[in-house]
Length: 192
Image (cartoon, rainbow, N blue to C red; front, side):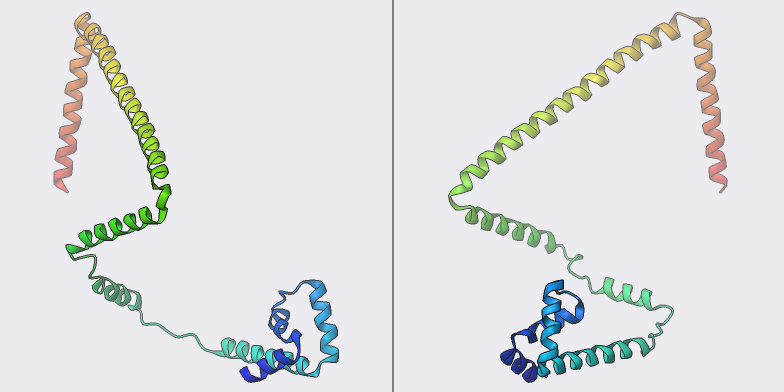
């Protein structure tokens, strides 16, 4: 069939469009031109019929073929085999090899950049400086918020606990109740 196809393509330029015609991939104008050509050219018409027969035969075989029944533990066996064959992840040398490969790729990138290496590193340095600045700002922000919260809680707790006997009694009652609930939870969790 290869030799027949090549001879049709050599004889007629429309022979290469037959597969696209069958698949519906041609534009409407190209499809019309090919259909008009098929009326005149017997070799292209014969080739089109042969390709249609082949596709029908494939469809018939694929439709009538029975499905393969798999054993019940098929998935478990496949997973066990796959896990046992993954030996590269269990070797301690794998990390050093991965580091070596990454370093080699980095050097290849540097060599590939050529004269633009300095420009790229300057842009990377500027980006890293900006990221460190943002990280420093966020670190200072979290630190300042936590210090402010601690100061506010300390002043509130001082006024709440030490200036009122009722508040102190409520606070001690809350602590005792919390200890009681926690101890009951621990006792129940030890039973099971």
